[in-house]
Image (cartoon, rainbow, N blue to C red; front, side, top):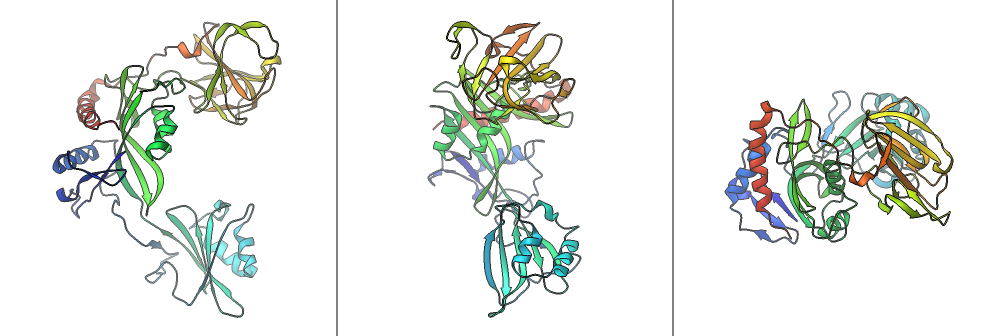
Length: 442
């Protein structure tokens, strides 16, 4: 895996001497001129839709920036100065701020004052079980709670100051964004390849979202490979996940399929090298991650009935409760129990295509006959209802009322790049294709 380490001067320009490419084991790659690297990344930043505004914080900064309640300042530190004893813990299940403060002997009038002071700062109902807190106490014989710091997420903390008058304020660490390039050759699966390379596993989800309509992730072949430019966010050295995909190339079934970002109608979309949208009319599969346990067949030995009969769908094995997604926009025509199919949802997508989702453990929120759904909406959850040997989804696809193999459906693309956006698209395509082709596979 490769990533870029770079610095930005106070005027927003890259310092030539700071640019370099570093490998996962710390070796510096010098075969790529530093000034070229700076030029390429600068160009990438200036392409609309690829990155955030260039004046965002990108330098590591220690400590917190504090936003006090009202206009009271908080000195130079995270909490008021004092001789404290620190005690750390985790929010228990079904524990609220009031019960946590009560555990430290805080009286109700003070709890009520803190609750009121937090109304415009932080919704205390959003305190999550499992999140950490640090209590700062004063006194030796009878310690008194003076400050409680709640860690809402990696970058944000909420400070409850019990000194009189009580106040509540947020403290935040800066989010540092790093532009990275990752490559990989598929041996078994995309997920395993990313793990072996030490790449953030969220990249698998992001790529599966972008390529959901063009790459069959259940049918990846050994030797398929990918190159991707992406942005990852960090707080200190802890990753907060993938911020955005800035460009990618996935080699699948003997073809290079590029993903070039472009904003069209105020919406960021991804297009192939020919300007066609990577978003098709239907998803390749109704589950993001699972495995195919049985394919479309006109003569399959039924695992329960023990005789051959048609199986006019595809079975996806997955744990009970796995979300099942609508493969395309449409209207729910049925959401009910149907004999051997168990709980089933049927969707009419247009005058030609319809789909069915069988053996569900339950229906998605608000799913009932007559409801309109969008592509990617959760319409149910994997189960084993009806005539079933175990948890799986039996997914069926119909064209003009006749069953077809879902794995062989060729869906037309949605709107391509418009003529008025073509010049910008060509510039971005030229840059990204050249950049991705320059990076060698591992």
